[in-house]
Image (cartoon, rainbow, N blue to C red; front, side):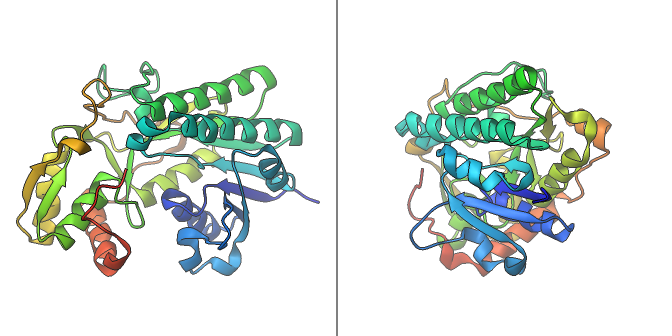
Length: 326
């Protein structure tokens, strides 16, 4: 069988669902791989207008056989499947080791054995820890300030070892803080929006003094495609971000201004990370991706926020803002 399909792992989640739809729009033949469940729940993709154009396979990224079998008739793999919640990594570090490290091993080893032509490994800006200089380029030191970030550092290094040891055609992308429709309220922008909608402007948040570089999910999808199409980025780590950042406090003001609702902020201690685990400032140096692919963010931050806010207003019954979900 001719290997023309692309597997996207973690395809039914926030970024994965947007990326799957984006690649289908661009004419790619996509297999959406996500975690097996007895209800055959396909996450966000069950609502997709491209539902009939996507092949779905459910399995377990932690199981080598599942990963091998989904990859055996494919040409490429974009690996997003991961545990991503930082607070839960304090509760169950082993779950992150098994999912993020062993899961990545299964992708790498299967790809090596099957002769997969291209593998994109999705990393995170959290691997940099608190910025030792700004903006952060790909040469910045790696610091595991949470079990989550440590697991992603390990997965990245394992991927690079496969490139150097076996000439496996891998690329690593490091998105900074992605936001947009469908994102879990564990993330800061959905949390702010959902609480403003449901709590009449009363916000219970953690550290509001940190700064983050936010990138709209549709811009992230276009960056993935640019990296996927670039022959010069094999064996490379490539940042994805705006080269701009904003404090969480200023972000609250911006969102509340758009929504025209006055906010009252309560700093909730249970939502704060330990000081030594908190990442204070993230600002992306995106010069590498611009140099190699000519990618640039397309969406204005305010317009992207409006798009995101409108989606949460239309889907407010899907989210609960009264409890802290780690």
